[in-house]
Structures are given as structure tokens and as C-alpha cells.
Image (tube, rainbow, N blue to C red):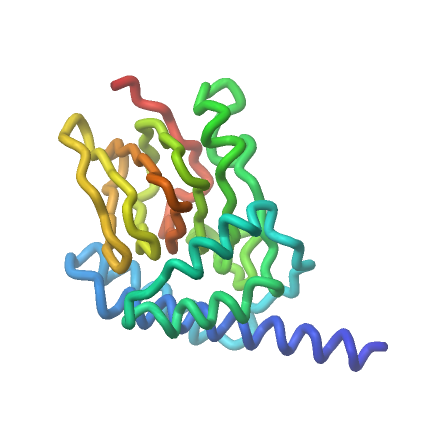
Length: 220
């Protein structure tokens, strides 16, 4: 029995490390600014540590159908290895719904977001597979046709988009569309919003510090 548990943990750790390595490779090819490069260097340092793995109890993704659809829509050649590692890791991850974790209960973020979001933490202070005191890195999913209201947070943020067809608004500027393979970097307290089109949105997401601070809605 102990050998079976150990074997399962070894498989889980291997798939999680492979996924993390593929994420870092994609980010290294895509980041441009000094802030973005610094964050990727932090991730690379964490990935090289040997004794930071914490076994998790995997679960079935709450938005499994949308997750599989988003993964199947990934066609960019530069993302295929990451896509494959994600498929291999899905059943070894613990998925969660943000029902107030990142927002105050009274924030009025809206039922669209609350009913349509899902994430998993690969690195994190409490729920991460690989522990870190403040940095969070994971996958973030929104189902199709969701308006994610304008908001801001103290943590800087990187999105590495794996989906096409999602529109973004930064400050009060016009909506712009971001494609798969693109980077979105939000500075601390820089407000932003998102509208997901007819296909679910999937992205790598990272808060390098101040990750325990709540998000705040911004009236626009």
C-alpha cells in the first residue's frame, strides 16, 4: 500500500514539474520587459528547488468540459508541448472556484465571474503543489461569454494567454483583443477588465508578491 502511494506521488510530482518547466520555457520565449523577466527568473529559481513538493489530493475539475474545450483549441505550434503537459497533469491537480478567495464577499464581482471561474495553483503559499511564501502561479479559466469586471490589486500580474478571442480593457482605454501566446502584464493597482468570447478562456497566471491582498472592483 505504501509503495502504491509513493508511486502515485512520484507520478504527480513528475507531471507537475514537467508542467512547470514547460510554462517557464514558454514565458522565457515571450517576456520582454525587465519586470516580466524578473518574475520569470523567480519562477525558474523555485522550479530548481528539490524539496518543495507538497502532495495534493487531486479532484475532478469543476469546469472540466470548458477546460478540455480550451485545451483542444490550442493550435499554436509554440504551445503544443505546454498543451501536452497540461493534458498529462490535469488529473494530478487540485482545482478550485474563487467564491470569495480573491475578493471580499461584499465586492459585487457578479455571478458571471463567481459561477464561471476556475483555477489551480502550481506554486503558492498554501494550496500550491510547490510551496512559496508569497508567489502564486497557476492556471486560470473563465467560461465562454463572461464579462470579468474592471478590477485592480496590489500584486503585479502576468497572464500568459493560451486562448484566442479574449478582449481586454486597461484603464479607460478601448478594448483590445489578445491572442494565444500573448503576455499581459498588469502593474500594481493598474485596473483592467476582460471579456471572454464564444470559447472558454485559459491562461497561465502569476502574482509574484502581495498575493494575499484582495482584489478591488473599479467603477467604470
